[in-house]
Amino acid sequence: MRSSQRNETTADCLSFEQHEWTSHGICAGVTDAADFFTQVCDLATAPLAVMQASRDAGGDLSAMSTALTAAGYEVFSTDTYNSQLELSACATSTSVTDCVRCAGSGYCTDVPL
Image (cartoon, rainbow, N blue to C red; front, side, top):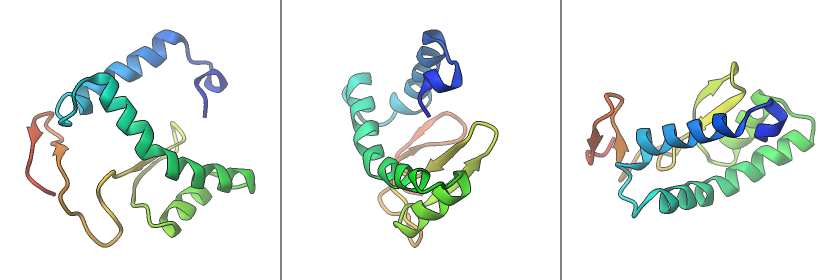
């Protein structure tokens, strides 16, 4: 959903971007924030197309989750309050390999999941 559809301000969007960068980007092994967001957007293109096709067919958040799973994406969280699905960039429904992540503690780790 576009921010304008949810009545978010520019400050809301900037706050979200800052959160994503400080919580996930700074330890992602990228050159800078622009590189991080470019990679995130590139990774999101295909799953967003699956979600859009589901939505165009009248699907709700649950239907989008089902469509993503059927397409081979691992949906690890459904947030109905914010109407969002959380996907892993490196996990599939059958394996988690070569995954580098930020630990829930906020510290960076290069330990595969």
